[in-house]
Length: 310
Image (tube, rainbow, N blue to C red; front, side, top):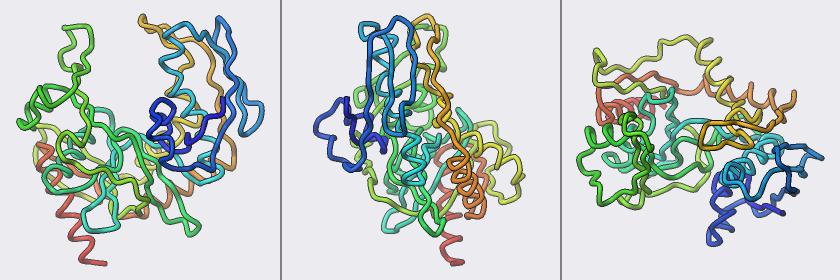
């Protein structure tokens, strides 16, 4: 199997959707040798060639195949392009070349803040959940693409965004009715006239968000522990090159099998360390808000002040 376009997140879709096969990175390809085996395993033959063993008739292997293939391309992404897949959201500011990178823990409000920035402030979506961070020859950081769909908890979405009606979205619901808070909805930006930015753009602002109705006050601060933030970024940037998020096989009962080896190296770690240092030198703020609308407003006000000082 000669898989093209896996250097960008769009490559996941390109594997299945023919119309997306020419999105970007036509010069990049990897050879994935897939052979039948009861127990999945993965071996790197060289930088561009991998031997993946698995059971092609088992959903537990096949349905995760596109994620496995994308993760395999992370080593090429980091070494040849100085790019790194990270867990974050990002938007592009209208009529500018700047991107706002939105960081946060799981459930902290990255997605709803990104949606609010797009819906109320005419920002374009760069990526949600996963984005590709890159560093140019001068060490300046940019983003170039990401996963372009919104996944929100239904209760959170309906509470903060009444305009998101059930007839406009596709639902993805966990089978257990006892986990109501984990019931989620998935929709595309185009369903709400939100544009997607596919251009390479540089980072103008970095925020770490915490959105919660019980927040004591809305606030923006530059006073935070650089050491703790560096540890968070260090872990985030290594998630995919080390295969932490990608089991080779995962069945409906939660049984994980197979071994996804780390393809990390000293060179890649050095690249990521420089990215962490550069990001911490960027305009970086912690934002706390009681709602995504207030979070988005605080971010836009902070961005405007920063732009005015340049």
